[in-house]
Length: 260
Image 1 (cartoon, rainbow, N blue to C red):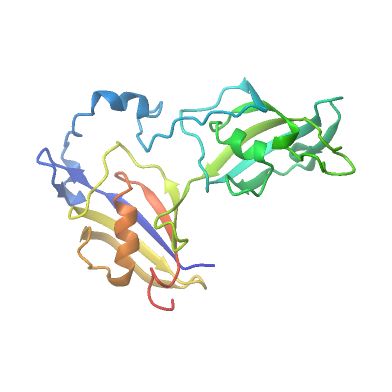
Image 2 (image 1 turned 120 degrees about the horizontal axis):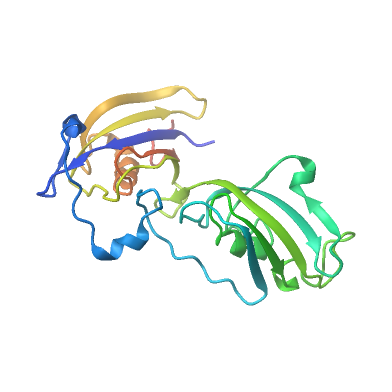
C-alpha cells in the first residue's frame, strides 16, 4: 500500500479575500456573498461542494426509483461505492444473485469496468440511501455470451440496487501518484487559493503504519514549499478543500518523503 497523509483544513476568509489563521475562527466572519447561480449547487443541509449534473441514462437502461435518497450528491467515477442488490432475469423474474441473500454488501469502484456496464452508468445516477430498479438490455449486461449457467445469452436483467454509501476518491494529478479520499465533509463552499495562509493538521504515515511526521495547528502558506517534497500533494489537496474538511492522501514516493 502507498504512504498516506491525512490533512484537515481550518481557515477564515476576510472580506478582502485574504485568509487568516484559524486562531481567528472564534470571531464570526461572514462568508463571501454566494453568487445567484450557486443555489442549485448546495446540498440540502447547506453544505457546498463540487456539483456534478446527474448523467443521462443511455437507451437500454431504464430506472425506477422505489425509495428516494438523501441530499443531492451522487458518486463519480473512481469512487468506492457500497451497495446491496438483487438480480433477476427480466424474462421470468427468476433470481440469479443477491448480496442480501449473502448478508454482505457489495463494494466496487465506480466507472472502472469492474462490473457490468449497466451498473457503472446506473449507480452514478443514485443518491445515498436510494433504492432503485434498473432494467438492463443485454448490451449493458452480459451480452451475447451471457453468464452460464444462470444467465442465458442475450438476456435482459433487472437489478434492485440500494446505494448504502461511498468513499469519494480523486486522482489529484491524474497519474495515480496522489489519491485523495474524503473523510469528513467541510462547511461552506469557498476554498483557499495558492498563496493563501491556512491553519492545518497533517499526519503522515509510512507503508508499515509508522508515523513519519505529525503536525497540528500548523500555520501554512499554500505554495510556500514549507512542507518540502510533500508540499506538492498537500497544496493540490488544500486548494480543493473546504473549511474543516478532512481527507486522506495516498501518495507514491514521488510525492511523499523519499523512499518512505
